[in-house]
Image (cartoon, rainbow, N blue to C red; front, side, top):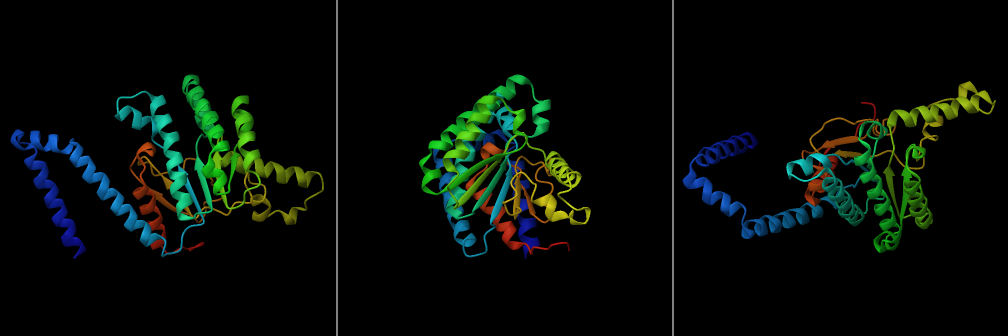
Length: 293
């Protein structure tokens, strides 16, 4: 039955593409597609679909820790003939929305990959300054956001923070300080972060303790590495989502995602919708978790 529906769908797509070759069809079709009525119908159907998805999700086991590799800001801007700064700004606003959706679902741990160590070495200084300004404004907004305080969200930023400008570090310290007493939810931002670098820093800590005589060689195991991670108190991610169509991890939480479920979506981060999040979680719920198998 599924194959029949699939063949029918492909046939319908082929027919539509053939008809759109004719101006008699393509011109009115384009006008209808760009009309307010069409967008209103699409928007309403998306909301209805998202609500139905949510109803299904909350009846099943939810992931405790969701992590997102927020990718595609620049390509979003280029596709819309906008400047790169616009894409990054839209990405910042999207994160606020996604935070609300995650909180609404009751997922207690939410982690995002915002800036890698590779980004710092490879991006031009003008783009980095734009990003740094967005981090400052975003963190300052978080520190006074009623939603953060009403929902008891603890904010933390992890990575090689010494690589960041002083103004960013000050905003990090402020956001962490004003939310440090909260325990209901934990929002973690990976800035100047690299998974390999995190493991290297953990190994250096183990080596230093061993050299000083504080750690016996036979006591060095995976637990000793784990408790030296930047955010060692976090449970490992249950679900890792990456946007923009890229299907790779890009040096994100390499130690922690050994058994995480991975979900890749083609949409650019600024276009990531509530339905996209729900579909990712639904795909997680359909899978049978295996640890080492």
